[in-house]
Picture (cartoon, rainbow, N blue to C red):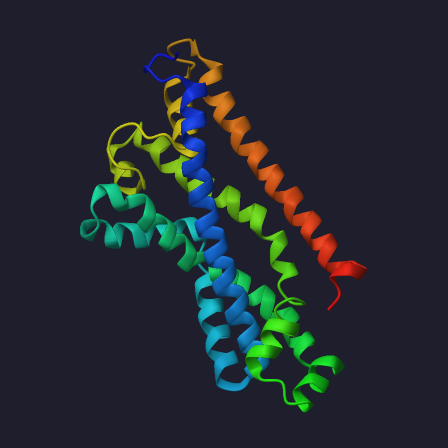
Length: 241
């Protein structure tokens, strides 16, 4: 037990399904929207391509954590506290999809102009079939390199604002967690950093921040290795379409 009455190990286990669901919902939705829009923009060209490109460039120009912070402040008054975390997930999807769309489009433009896609189009394949069979499977692998970075970006926001709230109550307005203690890895790391180490008071409860940090680090490494393996498979002989 630590000084604020939380069993760190039990809290980490309790937080695991929360974090897995949160990360999966954000990343899969952002990937799905970005990959589909990027592929459609490359295949259709013209106005659709210009619209997706302009919107993506405008949104990517703003740092994700800052954009999420501003949007969260804007909608907070309309959202009940128990819906803060789902609202946070929706906002992160809206912020992350443009980077996936841009990466996918850059690759999909090459795929859409390839000989086998032109042959399928000449044979009467619809746009939906071209997307499903050729463009998307051969275009989305570049975004896999961005996924581990976004995992740490999400945890940065989850950790930073609860941590800053320890020093200034204003930052509690930016935290996606309802009032009180919450079983989530980033929140546990923020609490550990707040109360587990204080050079002025000669406090160093190292386990309070070490184990949440190691959990987040291990999860990020696992995601990176999974994405790397999937990319190698897609680029290998068995992954060629």
